Image (cartoon, rainbow, N blue to C red):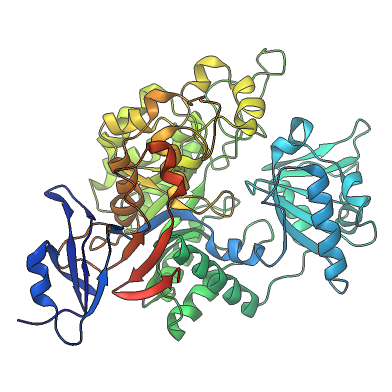
Length: 545
């Protein structure tokens, strides 16, 4: 009998396999699981076998993130990071300290500020001027759909009172038309194009910095949701390819090639060429990212009915569809025929419907193919469209951390959606009951990449640590096993890693050890669990000790 290289004993082991959800021991030979069971697995222990006594700690399939911006997040960790607070005074303190620590930086860049910190979600250029008046400052917000610039940055970019809004964005303005300092959606590119470009070394460093963080959170693979140039941000593709070739990419990564919404089907041959070039080792790029709309908080998410104003009256604004919905059907049909997966950003109910219509057109023309198209975010889904996910085989790619009561939801979203539409938000439970496949991700660096925090909110529909008892649409809660499956088997399915996501013989030994069994503790304490060890292909890539 061939002895194992690695054996875990004294579980519990949560397999994610419906045929046997629980075990107490697991063996690994090479990069794959060779046995799952109980005391009989110990027969595979030989003189060279590494034995890990779990001592009652939980072994799980490695988490996968189905929608993340790892390189961008890693780059931002080295910039002015405002994500740890929502206090305006603290933002300014952090900015002041960063500027003092980097006197030779021609631009001050970073981000992570939250809309909830400012009335109407709109900070001013004057606030930035009060801290850094002499150098341009450009800070993306936490959701990356807007940016905050100081006067110097706007001047250098030539953005003034007479600058028109781009078709895919908006310049927020003062009463006389002067730009106020906030740029929404495509308008961010007016300033971002001047920000000094990150070097290839910067991008690689950002990827490796992000990978260390993600492994420490139990993440063994992900789908990078944007490979391409977007609003002045650099294309991270070269970082992945370099790391894969050099052997420093320890995660399994599928990349989503950016669909340039200013172009049409003429870009498809370029996407085919890029897919062929961007494939090495644990990295490939078999998906195409189409951003169909924006976000609800700045009224650019595409809705079937208009947003409300502060008085509860209908406005003339129903958001933006970035790609013509009729053309979208043709594009997706052609991509599907070429075996591309399509990764939609679809946040408003009109965008969700337009994306589903495109998937339906592809299915009608090409038949059911193994392309695994998925719709990310799904903040507002019309009830009529929920059954279509299962019917079309469209995967619901959820970001659970957002499905809770917090200031951005309560102050900047619900009042402008109205009660009926607000009740359609993040319908995880309804999608599950209707037979949809769920995958889960974080959208980091938009929000925390920690899967345990996302699982906590999916189960509780409350923010980690919340004490006010307010549950956000409780009927949409998921049970813990389903939430874990979304972050493991569901995301592995989306990412095309069919031999991962569950613990069964023959599958990849992508594993995570938690410091406790979250299935036996109180649901309100899920987020307090911590990752002790992470393995990819049987190799330890993170240890808390």
